Length: 632
Image (cartoon, rainbow, N blue to C red; front, side, top):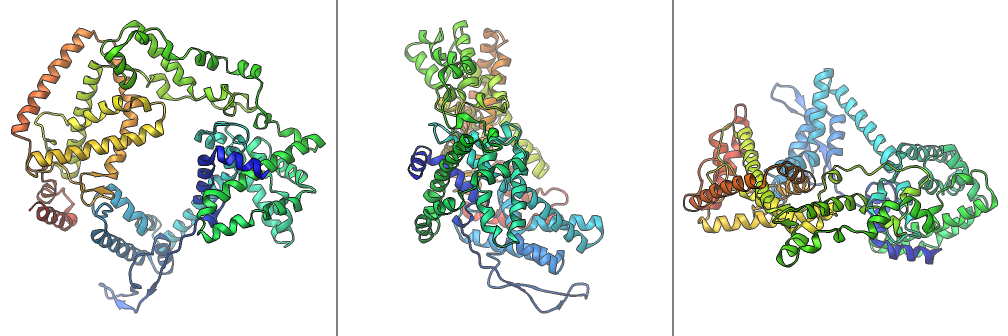
């Protein structure tokens, strides 16, 4: 069984390790594999008089606020009051900001949404705000803090019940499918959601936990019942539709006469766990944990076969036979006929595309660009859309992955908007021009609107004088063309979009600064995770999410809309818009758009504060002085 477990681990190493690592992070299992330590110390200092003459306690942080977090803030609020907690959060935030100023510039904590969010979460400021809000409603600080603690406890209990308590079932399903199949995709992590049995699996594990907890009070039951209930997560992973009593009783019956055997089997991994201890848990993360689960998955399969053979009561509920044997070709053909047909007649063989040779075929195949959209090419795209719908099922039909259509509990149909929009389509040159101009205009609206909200004034953003920011349109077109071959893989598409747009924004900023003699049209200095002030994590995340929206929704919608427009009219409009755009680009090369709110955003923030924002003036002045010094 251990040899078979090693073979499974070798075949599915990445996803098995990922499953155990996620479980460790969620504290669902393997908590000892990840150890974190933090030095925390604070004390309540001598009393001193407050502004109103009332005696108050002073919070003294020993050495530094580093190491303190929201838990300490909550403790201080419970021991003292909300104001004491607020003082501690302010000190933690101030300390983190000071450390960021003297540390790596890319980890800025002074500007941006990410910086503010990181500061509020790590300092516990959100807890103080929530407590103050509840106190204002209840009229009592103590009651407000009590309600906040109760809400936090309820949230933690809900998280434990739905996630930590249930995740062992999730990873057992992943390991079970990896026993005989070559492919196990990340989609199998949501298996319980697809069969609508997540809550039922959570309840099974919860009842098992309660039963075991009660047995622990007997002393001996803590050991005996640990092995009696050992198979419950495996049973729930195979059939989450049974009741908690059925799952627990079946585990007890299957483990009769095997508890000592299971104990010895666990003991055989002691050497690996000692090695993990001497490597600070790293070896456990990357080998021992997935190896042990993989081996015990084989152990469960052996006990399951034995239970069915001996006719143990409840064994008939273990009906997912295709976890342990591959389906016959006839059964697969009956359930996957449409998929097999698509495999035998792939879209690449559809009439029309083979007629595209030379550079036209090169553009179509590698970049998804068509100069002309003929009837044959429309048929090709229709076939591509159907392939996208069936792509995820092809591994099942080939027998390389678990056949989801053969599972006794029907899985939910894979309804995705992107499939109905056919995101694998090719785009004509005219459509790409419309997307370029349209997204450039949208980018201009976005930045003008953001500046209007932030500073209360209209500013024509960008280096050009017209209503467009070409970096947005260029990014959209590059995503659709350069990343054409990644559309079938959303995770890769997202990652590649961040890399591509990050490179585009960084180089655009660098080139514009060089060619304009040092003028900057944007500067992310002070933003969390920025690189030389040219790009930051906040902006790249927006590009990543926006890129997915463009590829899978927006671009197909635009293509559908302009598909009904006569090509002659479309071509005329595109040429006119391009002429105006290039004229503006040429003029702006000589006379770029600069000035207040365009190339000196910090100055605009100081000179034109919004009503009620005077309290932020000092920070804005400081940022402006620092920026001016850097420019000099």
